[in-house]
Amino acid sequence: MANEVNIKITADDKASPKIKELGSRAERTADKLRSMRGPLLAITGALTAVGTVGVKNASDLGESINAVEVVFKDASKTITDFSEIAATQAGLSMEAFNSQAVLTGSLLQNFGLSADESAEQTVRLAKRASDLASVFNTDVEQAMGAINAALRGETEQIRRFAVSIDDATLKNKAMAMGLADSEGEITRSAKSLAALELVMEQSADVQGDFINTSDSLANSTRIMKADFTNVSEVETALSALAKDDYVAKLEREPGKRESRYMHLFADPAVAPSPVPATEVAEVKNDEINELLAEIEELKAELSRIKAHLGL
Image (tube, rainbow, N blue to C red; front, side, top):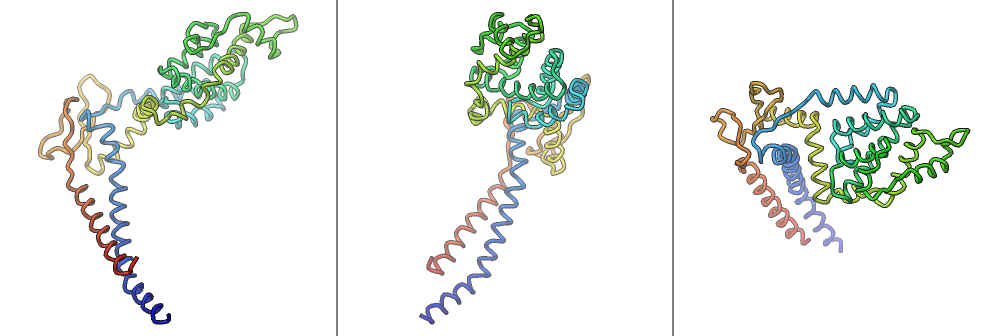
């Protein structure tokens, strides 16, 4: 038994340097793949199909943030924090959510809610709008617009989302919420707050549908579109790609304010120029093939070590 143990220890000791070397090589390969993942995904999603990408209306996001701060004041952080995850949580870009939030928040504050209350309810309604859009296969902005219209007393649009609100329903809900004045009268603001709760109650069955089906074609497309609409994310990705010579920034076209970028997978001797949308970029696979070959070598060497150890 002692001999057997000594033999195994010797084998392990001899194999140890090999295993360490194998691990180091595997880690280097993994690092290369990880470093390529972002550029490849970004290029595939934003550049390969169209050749160039325009970063449009960069000032719109800044303007929307300013509008959020004006409307929500000290509660604006609730809105801006959610805007950063609005793409994955509601299928809206930062600018789109901010713009919708300004409209909704203004309405809610006109109805008597505080800035903090209106911010919380705005996020709540944006999530419900995304759920309605997911179930009824429409744009999130359209669903949010229908909700805002219902808050204003215009109930036609919200009916397409299976929410039915009429004057009698509003009065009953407002009374149940204790929103009637001392004389039993119900103001326009009270009816609007009642409409908010009726929208949430009658659409309760769809709650969470956007998140639960975020991997579906429709919702994943909404998320991807929102992600790439976020100017800061696109600019950050393109700037990083430009540093590694994956893309080049082109001269701005006369009469246009957006920046343009072009991939550099083509012959570097060719001066950068816009690529027609119908052309598919030709990606050089040398580095990828080299990594794949290295992985195969690692697998083969690992198999030899296992065989040597009798594993």
